Image (cartoon, rainbow, N blue to C red; front, side):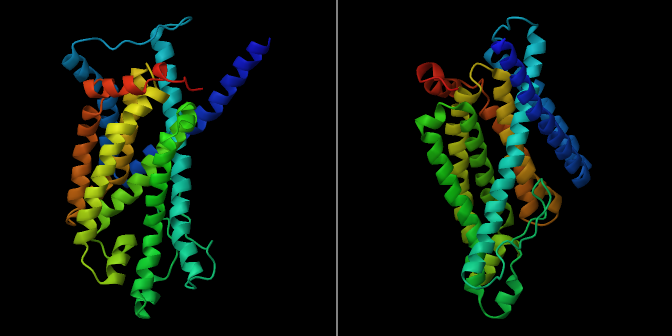
Length: 335
């Protein structure tokens, strides 16, 4: 009886996660439709690429079928599809929640620093945007600061937000090194996605917005009276190193800890990470055409959207070697 109640409780918890996760997935699709129908079509094609084209391509390259563990009480496809939908919903829900948390941290870092140095009366008075992360702002009057000759002060306030992301990136990376965190797969999952979000927020700013006259780096450039090129070049190089760290180290580790022996969810993971970094954040800069270099950066994001999942596919030999090194079978098994 206890096992029966436990099974029912587990199903209820799963539904409480899957339903809002699928709702947010639908809402993201609607947001893409309202932004650009072409981007919605592109997102749909990318889903087909991750779900069908890439696995088939990997099959031809490896010339060996992808094996899944045999279910005990139901058909393979039914069990497999249910697991994929559940994991997809969990991933979407995790992204939405962690994204809002990191976004709040970013905007409050601006606002509280402005309050601390006497340039704002209410640190909680920010502009709250929508749940997907659009139209948020720290609500600091930078124009007043520039007019008053307080350019360095404005630059310091503008830098407070990106600095909080940089600090959080290293904090989350440190947590992912923890053996305790690695023993708890869903804790690892949440911290991993926090790492992805805080990284892409700063990388996208540097890569696509260094040359625009507003936003964080525009205010830094204006306040310090410097050219955007140093921030763009140095920031992009550091961002590419961070991207290599995520794709080369953390993605295989995530496969081993959170989705061991589940190739479908591993494809879903690299697809979700690529979607967030290269389409949700960087790729949308393509809509700024003909603004240069921003739309070029967006185009680079679209290209990377399809190349990166191939390079970091769970079927790549180097990925398989990395998974084996991090496998829970070789360490203490996670919860």
